[in-house]
Length: 234
Image 1 (cartoon, rainbow, N blue to C red):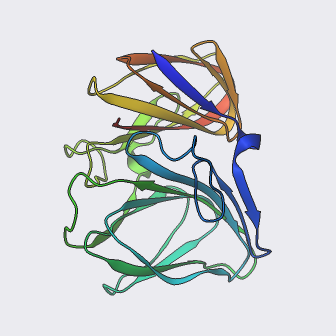
Image 2 (image 1 turned 60 degrees about the horizontal axis):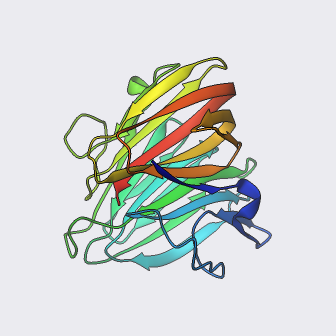
């Protein structure tokens, strides 16, 4: 098994007043040649947006964009006439394909918005742009990893890549095995809250770690935790 560990305090950071953002991988003004991507996982941003603020219309092309709200209300608008608000328990999936212009705003006048934005390189380029949001609440189960994105119809959402995303809310003392779907894949683990141990490595809140050249990992939960698993081709 090979692994890479990206501690929370080693991430890129920017404070724009209305936006506080942390970048696990190189993004915008943060450039680290050793932190460009993990396989097909290209961007993992941890954003907090002030009330009624947000990102004006901007373009994407040939990228799979996943947004996962952690707190508050995320409003999306785009050039293919979608306008939706999602909250924790929903996810947003956008295949930019040949090109799409979109905006993201905090829809609340009072609460901060916190969300993860994740970019995955596509399996196929120049496809027709698509956008969907999904209610993942029906599949979320305590003390297990619930599949929220899969390429084979076994999860609420799918993207233009052979990728499996799972979300787990886990009690301290649990030990969970995660089995990878393909031998050429790796899994990137992001600790939203709590603390776990994997392969003799302790990971705390907002730490990330990638594992590959293995068919499984064991996750020991040291504190009550919320964990996102992103399995992608390497």
